[in-house]
Image (cartoon, rainbow, N blue to C red; front, side, top):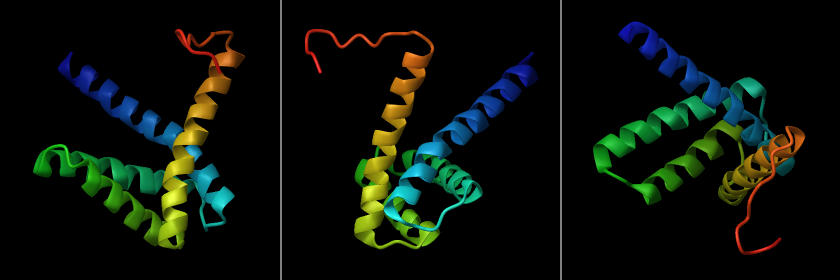
Length: 117
C-alpha cells in the first residue's frame, strides 16, 4: 500500500512538471531564446529540485529562488538577465491563460467573486 502511494506521488510530480514545461517553452520561444521541449522539461525538473533544496536549507527563501530561477534561465536558454526575467514573468501569464482556456474548453466557469473583468 505504501509503495503504491509513493508511486502515485512520484508519477504526479512528473506529470505536473511535464504540464508546467509547456508555458516555459512557449514563453522562451516568445522572447526569442533557444529552447526545446526537452530543455524546458529539464529546466523545470532542475528548478523543482532546487526549490525543494532551498526550502529545506533556507526556509522560505523566495528572493533567493527568484534569483536562482533567473540565473538558471540565463544559462539554459542563452538569454540575458532582462530576457530571463521576462521569461519568468511571461511563463506565469501563459500558464494562467492555458488554465483559463482549459477550464473554458471543459465547460467550467471561473467564479471571480465581486469584481468583474
